[in-house]
Figure 1 (tube, helix red, strand yellow):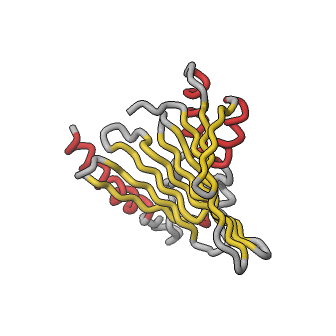
Figure 2 (cartoon, helix red, strand yellow):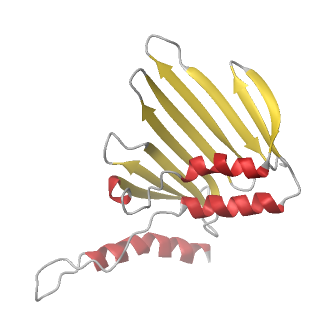
Length: 194
């Protein structure tokens, strides 16, 4: 079954490419019958919020600044605003989708599929998005998103990692001119079982 799935996943891009490159005999123009959809990150995060709401466990927040960690509990309703940072902006929206390129990689040794989204312009907020899927069922293992917000006197970079059914973290790096980089790590954990 795994070999059949691997062959299917390898052959699918070739089939889709051939479908898109067909031309009509009458007009001589390319006919594009396929619509490439990006992985629905927002839908996945919303499903994770439903999962978190169904669990009788609290969401723990660990904030680390200058190697000092503070621990608190986050109300699940307030956590939804934090999770929204993983969903916005939506690179799959009609306005942003043309600004991004998708590449995929199958690692048969690890049994994973990686979908990578990279912008084709320098001003895009999302600089990179990686979705790591399990090859056997295409379930999400992790989502990594990197954002950049350039300002007049500083640049803010967010490196965000969501681990399915376990937790997420947001590392915020603030670089001001002639100052050392300030780093804040916020980890949110709702299931820390190994």
